[in-house]
Image (tube, rainbow, N blue to C red; front, side, top):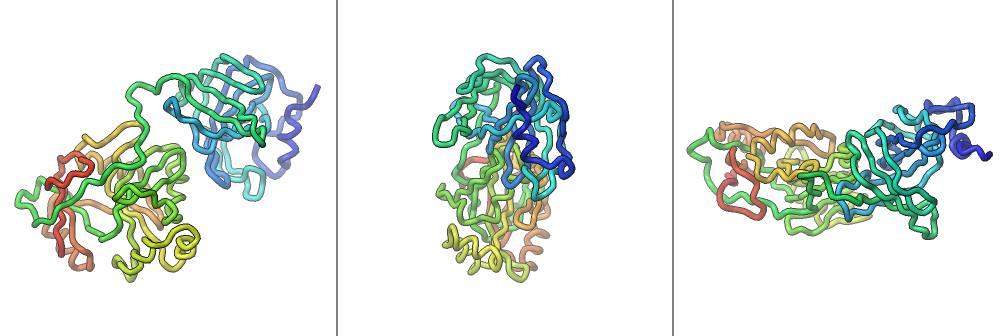
Length: 355
């Protein structure tokens, strides 16, 4: 009988990795256990492993579990893994096969509806993975390429995030008289940019809806930081020089794309200042008050040398405006604390107070 773990062992060194290393032949079980592992390797992906004939049949899915029908994702069929991998978490050393951090994203039981070399149809009963799914062999040039899609309706209340919403705008004005009803942010003079993070990947759109993902390679790693979190962010892309927004550098980055943008990363890096969250993990947040959306944004805890969530201030507009002038910023943005997010709206719930 062929050793179904031969390829698994052949790609690893027993003493070089913390991964399980079974010595005996696989022992068949009930063919009903699964695990999905979040794998921060060269590129973030999710490893789907389903028990079958004593081993875990495995697929690497770059964008993770699709939560709505009609979304088809690449699933690369990989070598079978030992059953001990059901609970494996750890750091595979750099330079080894699959090097990087691996954690259990979900685990549980599944039921088989159909299984052959061309089609695997199952129902997941996990904590996060629930529903009917189809792995389908594409039978193209690389026989390892399959697709994964959901067959039944999405969970009640779930909506996939849109790639873009027309930004809500601030109209020029003065500091509000009813200060306590407003919150304040610094105005950075940057380029308004929507970031969609989905399946560990980042897509950027400017305020017109044009795809500008290639302009900002520094921001691509934000997807890896957020993992399976799906979120649509509103914010600004800024270039900083001597502690202040640098308009000339920002214009240079606005014109650059592809290879030129990669070259500019070193001497003219961009920063993303997130100021709002419009959709989070399958639920739109537009109708929530501004302060509640900011709580959700702060809860994401995104902070890196290329992105952060600048602080906002409840009331105290005069002091915020004074600090803005002191630091050479363009001004402040006042936002009604209870205002929802209205895409494309400029009715006065947001005010730009220029210095």
